[in-house]
Every structure is written in structure tokens, then in C-alpha cells.
Length: 231
Image (cartoon, rainbow, N blue to C red):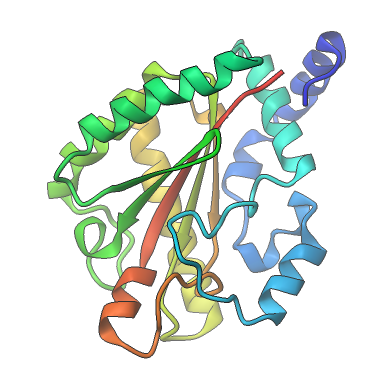
């Protein structure tokens, strides 16, 4: 929650210079700067139980300190916050726009409370083992970018995921590079970089069974979470 505007602006000015470093930091395994180390270790220790819906990465970047840093930075960039019933109404409109602009693209849009998650499957987004966006996916991502630009009172988390094949080092790197590729494309289409945080979660958060080809294909993905900036 945002408390004192003068204090937030001051903090925003101090954190603005660190935005690039925060946005391009290391993989999830190395990202204890987000203040969620204990939670991360517990999740890893439970072997990253398979989720039942898009958005299993909820909380990777939205721990209290990470959220406040992003809020302060956005205030410093002149982006206003929402309050009360306006939050849900704002996200209702944005959800409708995202669904309309990503229809029949393969992108899944899921509402989670006041947050919106988008799942970008590996098969339509990247070639196997690569981090360069497929050119044929640009049009689909343009619809996402135009919506995020229009509804700019939100924070954006971009999290890359892989299947279980390969070493942690390779998967952490690949997932982070894919998240960065998506973030860079969104930025090039006009989405403010100060709003975006990226993370490589590697193979730690599967949403399907990694023992099958179909399950591994589902786990190779990038998730975008759209979180309202609230007072």
C-alpha cells in the first residue's frame, strides 16, 4: 500500500536509477534482492508442486518490498495510482481489451482477483531452446503491448519458465533471456520500461507433468502478470 506521497516520491527518485538493474537482474535462483528468499527456498524444497492454472508464478516478484519499490518508481515516473472500486473497474476494462486483442492467438488470459495473467506458450513464441521471439508472433504481442500502454496504471511482471530437461544453469539463463526478450519487445512498442520487472524462474514452477512431451511443452512458457498500482 502507498502511504505518504512525499516519502514515496523521495524513494522513487532514489530507486529510479536502479530500475535497469532490477529489471535485468539474475535468475530466480539468484534473486534474493526481492526479499522473498525464505518463500523461494520453501517452494523449491517442495519440488515446485504443479499448479492448476496460469499464474503459478504469482508472488515471485510481488513480495512486499518488490511491490513497494516498483510502486515508488512508477510514482517517480508520473504514473498515478488507483483506489477503492476503481481498481476492479479498471482491470475489468483492461481484461476485456486483452481478451479482444489476443483472441485466437494462443495467448491465455486469466483473471486472478485484481491481477491479470497472460500465458505465452513456447511453441508460438520461441523456437525450441532459443530466446529470440518468432516474427510471426509480433502481431499477437502488439495487441498486448497496445493494451498495456493504454492501461498504464499497472505494474507488469514478465517471468520465463522452462521444462525440466537440462541443467539449472541453462534453464535459468534461457528463461531469463526469454522474459527479457518479451519485455524488450513491449518496451519497443511503447510500454514504459519503469513498469516492467523480469525474472527467469527456470524449471522451478511447472504447470504440467514434465514426464510427457505435452506437459513439457506447457511448462515452456512466458507469463505476463498485470498488477494494478494501488494507493
